Image 1 (cartoon, one colour):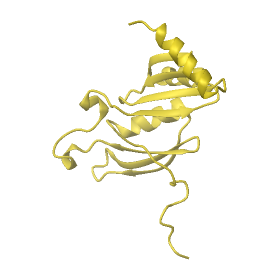
Image 2: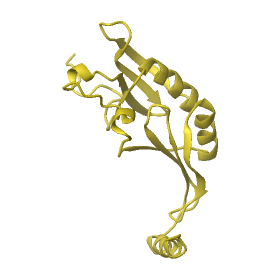
Image 3: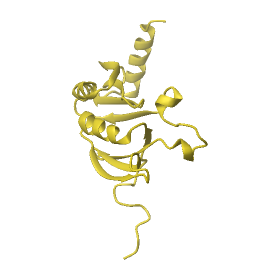
Length: 160
């Protein structure tokens, strides 16, 4: 049987997160998002994780500890970089409950869930490792015209 060039479950884009204390991050993601640890490989130092794979819902996430010694001596975690321009987004059945669960597990709510002009209930958190996550529950189907009118109204009433 020939080897599959793309393993089952790895067909889409897979975020790869770099964190300080990957073992602690695995526990947070299990507690906050119900993540399942698919695999993990310890580094030769026996302290850090070289690689871990999580399953959150139907999505895969790769995770590893920071290894500045392999990156020109520079740390690449969001904490070391002062944040990240990347947001990990997930549609869920109840974004309020997911955000509350993440907060209870140690995340900081950066935008409480609110109904948005595009038809989703949406909110954001920053996890204890510096990564930003957004969660949404679709609550209203809208035509492009309805969405454009709702956006115009939302921005007309936004604080300047």
